[in-house]
Length: 174
Image (cartoon, rainbow, N blue to C red):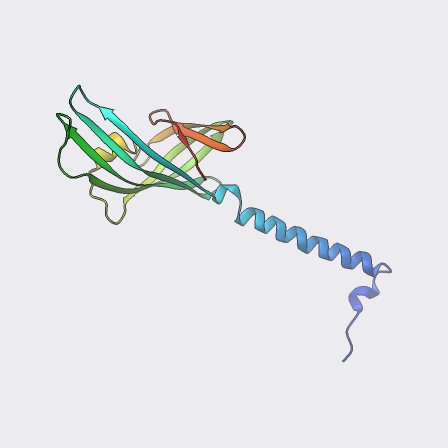
């Protein structure tokens, strides 16, 4: 069986053409890999645990994990899985409330600042919290159209830290 060599008939530099074609295929693969597995698709994992002290004898403990995902260059979502415990007179008042929420958002970037506009929020399987508790202790911005401004910092050239104007700074641990 003979091979049609018509593609090579138009050039005297067959090896150069073969090298160029191979380089273009390799470069195309690298660009595809860079877009598909880009840092914008990566996850930020941030375990948190903090007390909100209402007065000398009453407090609320919030424990959980935020996970942030980039869905595209200008949108993403954050999930929170954790619990909320109220303490009255220094003792646990009732069972902890399970929280499992997701907030979707669009972003607008200006230098180190990111403006997050909430597009939706959802309860996930197992969530037992009220919207008020979530707004007070986990996501201050959960209503559609609300905007939060966040600043991103690179710490020691290794990890990212960010947070909105109403949430403590969060450091990605992955």
